[in-house]
Picture 1 (cartoon, rainbow, N blue to C red):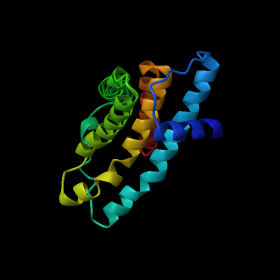
Picture 2: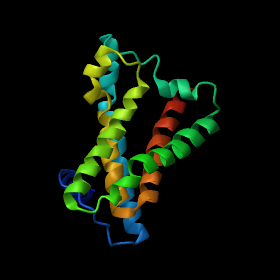
Picture 3: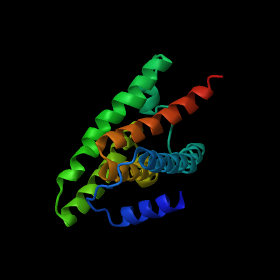
Length: 182
C-alpha cells in the first residue's frame, strides 16, 4: 500500500500519459483497492472541516444540492444515480478527454485542468455566497484530490477503471449515509 501511495504522489507531482503495462487482474484490483482506500480516507479526513464551517455559520449544509437531488428517491434510485449514472457521466466529461493530450506538457496541463474543473464543478453543490467563494478551495478539496486519484487510475488502467473507482467511492458514502437512517 505504501508503494502505491508513493507512486500516486509522484504521479500527481508529474503526471505523464503512460499506461500501466501490467494487465494482471489481481495486480489491478490491488492497486484499485489501494486508491479506493486513499479516496475514502481523503473524504473522511477533510469532511469534518465542513461541519466546523457550518457551526461557525460560514456555510450552510442545509441546502446541499446532492441532498436535494436525492430527496424523495428510494435507496435503489439513489444508488443507481449516485453510484452508477453520475460517475459514468462525470468520468466521461472529466477523465475521458485527458488521454487526448499527447505531448507531455499538454498532457500535464490537461490533467491538472480537468482535475481542477472536476473539483470546482462541485462548488455548485452549495448555495453560492461570498463565504462559499472564499472557502471554495477547501470546500472542493476532497473532490479535487479524489479527481486526481481517479485521473491516475484512468491513465494507468483505462476509463472503465476510473468509472468503477468513482462509483465505488460514491457508493461507500451513499451507504454510509444510509446508516444514519437506522
